[in-house]
Each structure stands twice: as C-alpha cells, then as structure tokens.
Image (cartoon, rainbow, N blue to C red; front, top):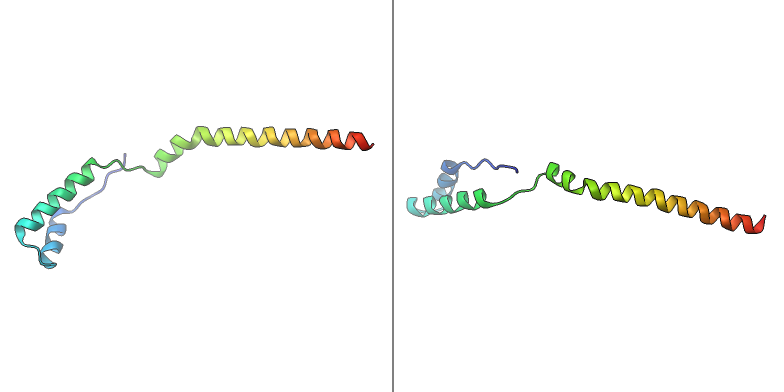
Length: 81
C-alpha cells in the first residue's frame, strides 16, 4: 500500500491563516489525518499485479483470433483455387 506524508503543522497553520481558530484547525487536522490513515490507496504497481493475469488472457485471445482468421482465410481461398 502507498503512504501519504501529511504535514499536520503546515495544515493547521494554513487553516489558521484562512480564519479557523486553534481548536477548529487542530480538530479538522486530526480528522484529516485519521481519514488518510484509514484510506487504502492503490499504486500503479498494485494495479499491474492485479491486471497481469487479464493481460496474459488478452494476449492468448489475440493469438487464438489470429489463428482462427488465418484458418478462415485459408478455407475461403481453398474454395476458389
């Protein structure tokens, strides 16, 4: 799983600059930190691992379709030669 770096001090400071008082800023910061910790982020590597079997199946299907088309063309051309 991926992790996010969360600068709580900077977040509190920005909230205070926007007009939040100290208690509000700290409460919202704690809520954000908890939400980030509970979230399950998917990375590109996670997706590649999950999608690898599907990619392999698609490659197999491409080869099978190519072989079927080649057989169909051979069959069709055999009728006219």
